[in-house]
Length: 503
Image 1 (cartoon, rainbow, N blue to C red):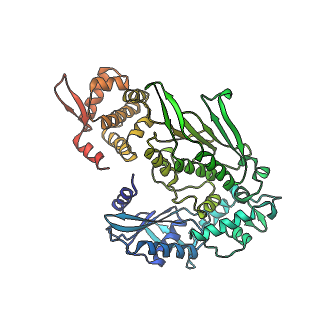
Image 2: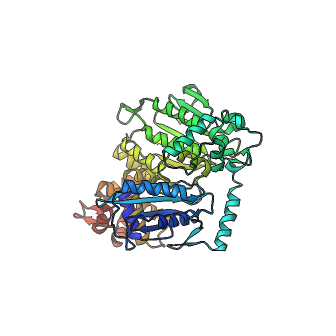
Image 3: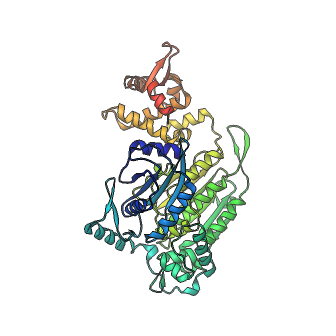
């Protein structure tokens, strides 16, 4: 889904507990609302939109957004990442401000604590403030905020800290305007009462693996299958988060062209993984991995036809794997680490990293990457070229391979087809049949029209079963028949197709 389409959908939905419209860029009004969102569940403010969701636009949006950024960074306490972007809708500029739920609640703006109550921004009650303070006390017990005993100032890379401080100012993302390095660390919760947190060790230690061996990264490259005798490279990298990022980026930039032989087409396929997508995958893994256990790991495995990044941890309960290919709320596992990465400008949009990965792979002509959560790991797989034929893709559908159809259509269309079946087919129909109906509709969307025989072969079911599926969907206005009995083909219902094509 494009940002333009996403914003238009927001306008249709109207203001909610996570969405607010502002007709102009009044700093105080926007500051109150951003503070409230930080103290609630996060959300977005759209500037240049009337209360009736009409697009009015913002004059001189670049200067306005720059002024807003500086004001909010200086006036909201404590410091927090705020995304500000300019989007053009119908040739009118709209400023979009986005924040995640704050990790250091309560947040204060202009001497007050604001809260989100429904679609309204209000001053927090004493009960709401008490709840926020309690949540902060719970958050302070998080692993990255625990003090690492025995770690000293001399164990830190002072030059790296200085560069981070300078870059945070140059990026207009930091409210700290001093030059004292220890004050800078204290300002961002990386130093407390003269001691340094685990997050500080991960970010700025000169010898991170000495203190936290789980910070290491392993790279393994295979010439063929996953066997020891086919190894091209097997290396363990050490360093703080920024050192590891630099080493890994240098590696992927020099990864070069990969080749594999496609036995279906009887030819060699040469391709390159999109560097920007790999960069996003790497920084996401370094930021969001679970560092709390000494046996946690981050591994990068390169095969002839895929590249896999696996890091210890799990997705937040609020986030499902299917959400990663869409714009989604940001739920950083390590908010202090993620904030410093944000200050350095290494991530631009909260909740957009996985979307960017997907977009870059599609632009490169590669199959969409896949995310999977398994046995305490989050696994991101970058796939090689799309070399499978239509018949092979249809065979994959026999096994209800949902990923295969999702790769061929957009997330919006995929969701719309799923919703159409769920709404039209009653609960008496079992889930297995519903799943097959959804996949049949998706295939009809891709191929436009298919015969009963083609559908049978694709889904490996009998003629009677497929006929029942088609009659059921026709009765519920999901599909139409065209042609006489002997030449009959099946197409998506005209009204439904018109809706899908508008997405």
